[in-house]
Amino acid sequence: MPEPIKSFTVDALEVRIYANGDALAAAAAEAARDYLKRTLSAKPTAAAILASAASQVKFLAALTASEGIAWERLTLFHMDEYLGISAEHPASFRRFLREHVLSKIKPGAFHFIAGDALEPLDELSRYAKLLQSQPIDICCLGIGENGHIAFNDPPVADFNDDQPIKLVQLDLKCRRQQVGEGAFPSLDAVPQYAYTLTIPTLCAARKLICVVPEKRKAEAVRAALRGPVTTACPASILRTLSRATLYLDADSASLL
Image 1 (cartoon, helix red, strand yellow):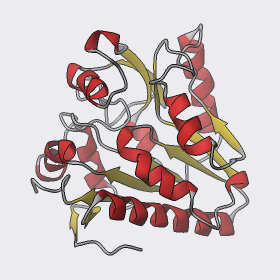
Image 2: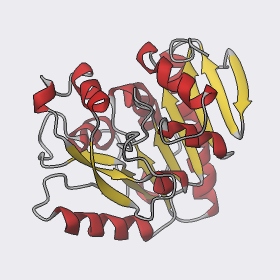
Image 3: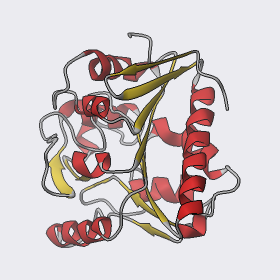
């Protein structure tokens, strides 16, 4: 495993900084692999939540290339999806995960959020039941440029949400990020609403691995680690979780 150039804790959260994005991805993937192997040595099945974003590509590539994971004993979930777009849309997170995960490994099940479901409220109910059918062993997530986790942007983030999944309006900074990452050609093309797993659902996982590379995330990382624990920076909630580890590179940690 690559060695971090610096490690420390902020409140309960362990933080590891690596020299570059490749080292970060390799270290986070190895930690996820080891945790999954230990979990599957202790029980017959496990469940994981995966993030869909440009910042997760190297991590997912390293994780799916890992040896020794009994993928056929894993149930996978994803954490968000745009409302109203098909699974074939270039920006669909279902498409992202098919390309970056399912093309490489074969899990026992992968439960997708149907962004284009004809009855969105029924889709919320369906997915909530799936999430509640088993405990989540590991959640692999990132942090958005506005400090969001999943699509829990500051205006809609709720640390005490009583729903496992909800529909939210995306804030302007979040929608601009999607354009900046190349997911959409213009701001007008970005859907205004999306499904997201709520913060309590993400934080209920028995292990959280948060993968945050790149300079554009530096301000959000600083707010999460140096500011107050508040929904103004939803990722700050990670500081309350001793079972979470934040993986940074030199760029994303540059403002600390």
